Length: 431
Image (cartoon, rainbow, N blue to C red; front, side, top):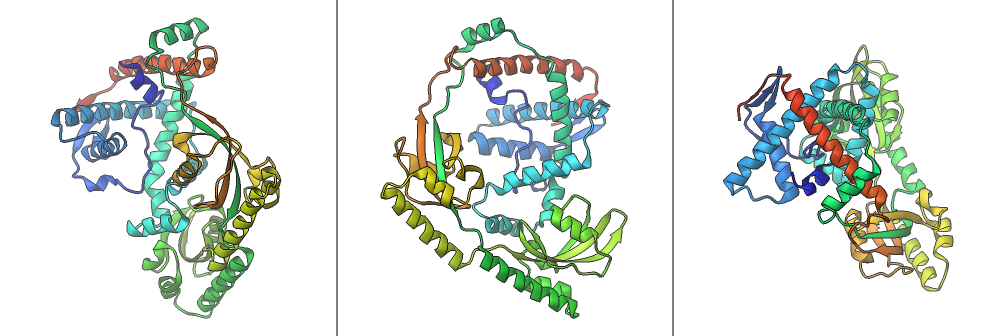
């Protein structure tokens, strides 16, 4: 197999979890594509992965031979993943707790949210798809649990792989013309002036939420209030979130909901999404059924204007010769970098936000940009260093080459393990 493919997929099989709000398996007609032991792979699942592969590679599916070949390869990879999961679930040394799943689920949904320019855009997409935050978590929970099992199993099996310096040298000599180049990169510092709601706006939003709670406490219909005033996609259902268990909601919401008895209404609860009023309608064991009203965090026009005025002021100070690091320490809202001269580290060029990539394209090391707006607020970027892409050098990039060589060896051993494992189970391909 070509070394580029090995490097591209590394240890994992090439089409594991790709997170998106779109591409539900329900879009396709179901049928059984394969049987692995006593488990099935649906045609819809293969079609979903095929669709994602096309989106990420721009493959032309009008070529029927190419389409059939890709579909076959995807199905074989899905069979391998099913075998990994079966073996992982049998391994008594592997423990995946509900806490592990919920934590990983929160992380993955955060990555989904990062694909959107703002919290409002994320919520709008949820609404467009008829989903609530809870339903989004439910959609991915089993996938996340299965992925954790597979990852832990692979880590246990493949941590035993060792590679000698001689093997690294042999690998480099054999594949050096096919190895990926050291990517172009840029070392950045920034000053962030956030457009998040200021304290005055937060106080106003909390006061508004409190008024809505007062209406509910005085006997007004909670569901009608949610339909009229809630910013959450659940508003169309009167704020109904359905049943959920402990750990399925963000911690502040979870704590408040499970402290209530059926019929009770919470105080105003603040989470990362805004201010909530929660009403528990039923409770059974470790599950509750609840509705809520959300007053989401939205910067006011005054908040945005404040940020614009401040970032322009800071930019003018830089033009007058003020020190970038000192201004970062004084004005930046990024607590992680403000005390370190605004330094946010190295980024591969293709990892940058598009808006960042545009403004730094023509900026040389030591220079800074005009203010640029992202979903976090206004940034002034300073380029500290730039590196162009180049071939990997055996001496200078030994650690990277060693890692690639180890992953290549690991992939070979994984392929052999999968070949042997396939012989242990009943596998029938129907597609």
